[in-house]
Length: 512
Image (cartoon, rainbow, N blue to C red; front, side, top):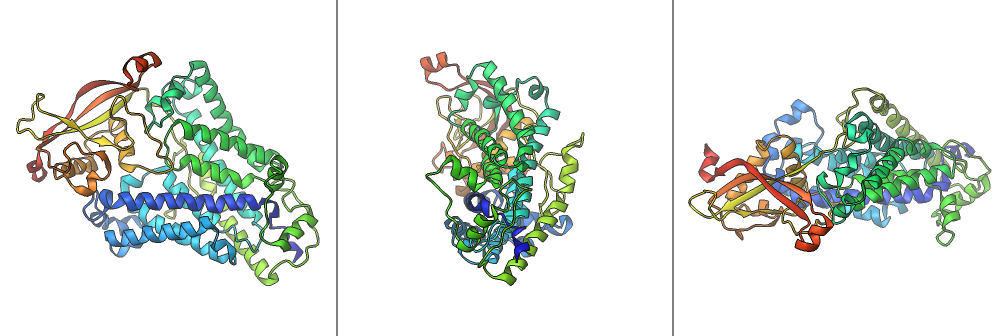
């Protein structure tokens, strides 16, 4: 059974622990987000009801368990199942058994969440949805505590991290001039979709430091990813650079689980030996003594890096027949994912690079990237209602408050990531496109009805459950206040009203 060890990476147990439990934690957040928001957004009485979208299943050939019928009850059961399974993986319970148990657990998570994403329409049209699906399918083949991590699967996981980082870097270099002249972060912290509690402080940093940030970003996304495949300790150092830069992004804004996904996936290149050398007080505890002994005798199948290693004479390797079967299964899965990676590889070097695109209906082997250009001004959509019969400008207009979207001038933005506020994110896109979207008008009419499920998506209903007489939509320019102005007014935003975009509408307009 010596040949089996050629496909094993016993020096990457910590990497597997982080990958499996980290991806499972992101699935937990994703299912929790869907449980709390999907019925109001896409349920039977949602803004874009899935039953009305059902006719597109066969036309689009999208794999989903809702193909044979949707109900909010079924959706909630699926989310509950996803929460339970991902929770068990976080606790490490499936990993205690043979490799096929975590394999099945992750494939169930993948199938359940793909079923949700494929009917989620615009509310699930984010790049990190397909990233989570691909990550879940990939780490499914990392095995369990009874066997060492498969080298081939760690390679394709590092390849996924490479595509995520390098794709984002290439999109920026090919995108707006602000990324090439290093001025992108003059604007980004202020105009990003959902600022966090420290975003204003990042925005107020000196402009020369903003240029340093951009240079650091280009280095981390265009140079460092190649070193994920280098010999150790370079690969672990590259992973550490990715982790640090992603933590910087987490501190400066809210991007759902995108940054956390990059951190988890980068850990595929982290070697136990390097970690133990840097942090000798926290040595990795191997769960299978037999293959740990084999690894120590062989010098580590992956001890020289992703492509280098030695082979010793192991004793007591568990389950000889099962070992080679599992080695072949994991190798076949790695080859399958590598073949699917051909299209995104071509896309990375294409002049017409696609951003966040899937090349198959299973959302495996995708291409990623974000913020190829940076918005220069922050224009917010403001939704207001009134109880007055006369909807003139003199009426008592009260603003609806969102959980993550900026509102009051003095309010400190909250940290939501990795949780995903889907309504708030789509509100950010409206000024960049148009307010005349189907889901947005449905949202306004739900507010006129004081729909409880819709109101729960908001932070504050100015009418405490009572139906407003009229609803209108306007926009406003939001700018972070200077330190001097904040000391005077305690306002974090300077808000300049612009114009009315949708004139007052009432319930009888629904039928019009």
